[in-house]
Image 1 (cartoon, rainbow, N blue to C red):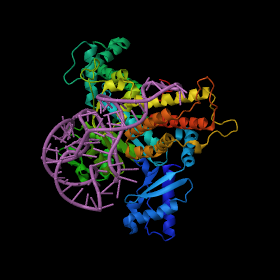
Image 2: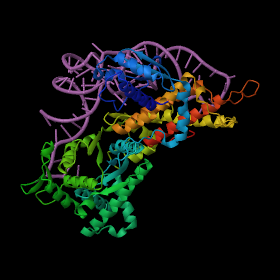
Image 3: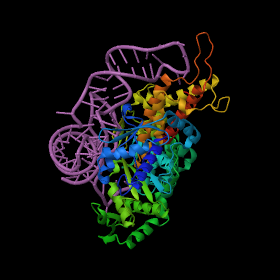
Image 4: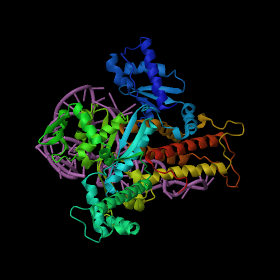
Length: 557
RNA sequence: GCCUCCGUAGCUCAGGGGAUAGAGCGUCGGUUUCCGGUACCGAAGGCCAGAGGUUCGAAUCCUCUCGGGGGCACCA
């Protein structure tokens, strides 16, 4: 019996009590929260629903709780119901009803924890979107880890998700980038406002090897060829780094394509139809102040060139045209000034900025004692961080704190193999559980038993077993909640609790039969078999949770 | 000046308006015939930055103050 099942049992109970005239309620609440109480004395599960509904039912909480409790006691699998404090309902369920979950999880496999809360939603999730004028650095890593995990979470909740990387491949910075590479090709110093960094020289060397004729030919044509080659090479390098970070985008969206396909003009025309365009001082403005922005934004400058903002607007309209109802942007804290503008674009386009657009802001991170890059100068590169700390440790650590909390990464912790390194702690629990299963099998513990039975949920009566089962039971809710709030860290924190519950169980409950002093072995019983099922269930949930964060679940380590 | 995020144990941080505010590290003390001790169990440690307010009930919601991070372009 899971908390979800209990929750719906309480709802049923409420409805029955209303029908029977025992209580008066206008409506049964959509959600009845059933939680694991902090203290074990308060039963297996508890709900505060009576406290919440008392006012509406025009009765006191304890009285309402009495009505619910009386009916709930009759429910299959419910062992005891108690009313405590101001009106909490504490529920104890019997071991068999709780233990059944182990089998449920194993049979659900990789899909355990997935839900359909967001089924039918089409979501565009944009993150990283770093300029293709240099390698990814630390500023991008948190967004990358968070964004990818959020994508996985949304999919686990049934949403149709497209992850997208917007490539700023138009505009002046590409020219500066090209100028920098050309200078490097000819052994000249970095031009004014150009890109410094050893990676520019790397790109130039790579290019000179393939196309030696590009040297010493300063011309418009050369510049344009160099720009293309350098851009392609740099983008490929970024994609390679992302692949090493286990991130693959569904779509790489080119800003340049917006210009080339006339989408900017089309977007302005659309916005003009909506009545939010204003021509002023020779420039074209979008009247974003209509929707709470602090000033109107320029789309076309007085010199006739479109602004970066114009491309943003066209890009938003593209997402809209492609049928995404929700557009999620994951931006660094240094971009938080964009929120108002993006929402204003959505509003100008006729969307509801509260519903169709969602901007998540991630605070920046720092790395204690971080080494600066030789390749890019005064920045820390993602590729170096991966090599230094590993993809798993990095991704887990970046995803285990809420996006809006500042984060200081301690490399020493990430490299340690003890409890103080959360990713290790969780992965270790998984590896240990896999090992326990291997040992049990080697000692003849099978999952079905000679008579086809083997699994007997009622045998899982140890306190540590109840505790482990309870943790396993809250996984689906954790996933749904994390997806709803776009907060992957909830999954990480959950996994740490689960790992702890697993270790505690493992310390007290043997899966494999004991070996006596004389070398003979205790016979295999259904308790061993059933515990093997429970162990399998723990493995499955640890693996599913890590997968949501894009972190591997090693079977040995 | 305006906007925004943060302030919880010595440190790094969790915490969905509910019961006695939690975890890891660090400190102190325990646990081993046998599945991975890279683990487990226990203790000490708190005016949840401060002040008001809403509520039966606030670390959580609202207002203000203090302290810290980030942001304010016809740049990209």
